[in-house]
Structures are given as C-alpha cells and as structure tokens.
Image (cartoon, rainbow, N blue to C red; front, side, top):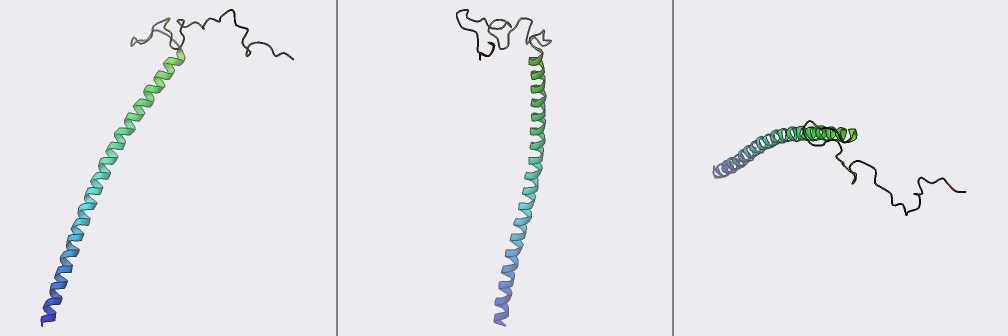
Length: 108
C-alpha cells in the first residue's frame, strides 16, 4: 500500500511537470505566432518603403537624364549645372596642353 502511495505521488509529480511543460510550449507557440505576425507587418512596411524609395530614385534618374530644365517643384532651373562647373557648358581646355590622346588620330 505504501509503495502504491509513493508511486501515485511520482505519477502526479510527473503529470504536473508535463502539464507545466505543455503550458510553456503553448505560450511559446503563441509568442512565436505573434512575433511572426509582427515581422510580416514590419516586412510589408519595409517593402512599401523600399518601393517608394525605388520610385523616387527612378524619378530622380529620369530628371537627371533629361538634364537641367524648369522643375515644377523648383529644384532646377534652366542653366543650372548638375555636374559641370561652368553652368552646363563643357569645361574649358588649357590651350597649353597637348591634344588629349583619346581624340588624336592613332599614329603608326
């Protein structure tokens, strides 16, 4: 009879351990699902931000490819130089320099 009582205590103890472990697992699964959901929302927001940045970059690239022009938003006006130091004109060559090798005919 005594061994039966001890065995019952051990079984009850193991049962409580298993029950606690199962509750912990359920809690972890819930937290993981919540984290995945939050991550999906964050990824969607990040994706939208990247798509907006990409569109802005395409628009800017298109504006730069068109060259200096009147800009509705007031960014560029005629004559503005984006990359040239002389107001959109090609840089002046120093007359004392020999012709550039790329433009001179090949000598043989």
